[in-house]
Length: 585
Image 1 (cartoon, rainbow, N blue to C red):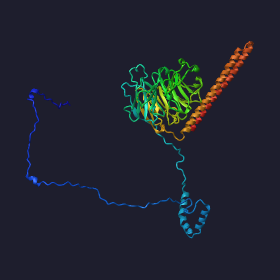
Image 2: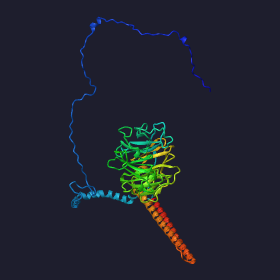
Image 3: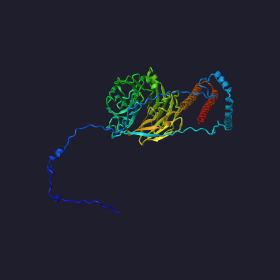
């Protein structure tokens, strides 16, 4: 069907409208009514009178006085019938005397004859039916299954047109109503015209940030003071550290001097446990750890160079870059740092020399350590994220980890423990997926996998109450996720079960380390025997042949014994694992 045009335009020239009209305003009397003198005689002036009006119901004044009622609590002890109020039921002599008095009464026999028949009927019925029978006792009780899920509460987007990567997130200590996000484009080719400002967001307002921080260069990391929500510290792209007070404005109140700061990007800053709450330490990829005080921020109070070859020389040219930093307030002066070569160092600031400060080392990953975090409840166990795997370590086992995740198809970008449920940890991946692992439920796969977005996830920071977590991506967007109770709350026996799991795995790794150490000693002794037999000279050819035959025979026997011991140890460990799995199941 063709469309019909329902409109038509009429056109007309200006000259066809005629002469233009000019309108003017003027006064004109329409009517003039003259006063009547006769009507003046009928006018009566009345005095004004004030009169009140009450529309509600009028009641007379009356009062009612009621007597105060007094109450008292009274009861009777019915374990052996109703005892009188005057009688102490716990006194044996009084109860026996009262029973004899009642039994001598004439109405006692008649009362008992009336009460015994119905009571006998009830007793016979109870004897017929087993009132204590437990129905369906053969069925195994099934515990309630809690649903595991997560939901996105809010989304916070960068207000600038050119989107930048979020490199760090930090929750405020005042019940977590705010969080700070540092925006920095780590792609230096595209970072020329970027705006260096970062934001502090209010959880309830995802539209505009409540505070805008305006540094002179981009911020790589930003941390709240754990005791004052108005004070923040940050690590800058120039290697400097800055202190912020949001009450005094959007610019830093103090910045460290360039000549006393890091030589590379300052990618990690953390507050340390001090009486004044003014001390923190920073790390950079130049291989230095510096301790600072915000009261005198021009230069560091202490510097430590991570030189693995000769720690006492403190040669910064041979230092290894630091990619992750960790500090637990409950452990005093101890700290941990993850290096770019995959080594984790457990250090102590109180060490007398540099080698004592970085004495403990773990070969954790094959590549750089992306995330490093201690378990908030079991502080001896820590989590490392790097390459395509996540590993859980114990400070008692230095050669190998006690648990690990299978290799992921996508590169891991970070990880963190849950603050409230100590067996849960989170992993973020390059494909925009969040994996939630619970070691008490299953160890081979995550209990929850959520596709947060299509972009690369860069950082995750759980809330101190455990139910919320902020996740950032490469396009400057922060997602606020809420998790179910199954992922945030601990059950009655979870702590005992998780303690047993960690102890069992730690004990197994210790046994393996002892077996491997024993095998290495045996192989070393075999090499020494071979070198001694080769060095002996001055004997005849026959003697040499006999010695070679005897040495080869002894070597074969020792090697066979070593292999048998190693196989027996592996079989024993496998049997223990099967037994523990059967007990848990």
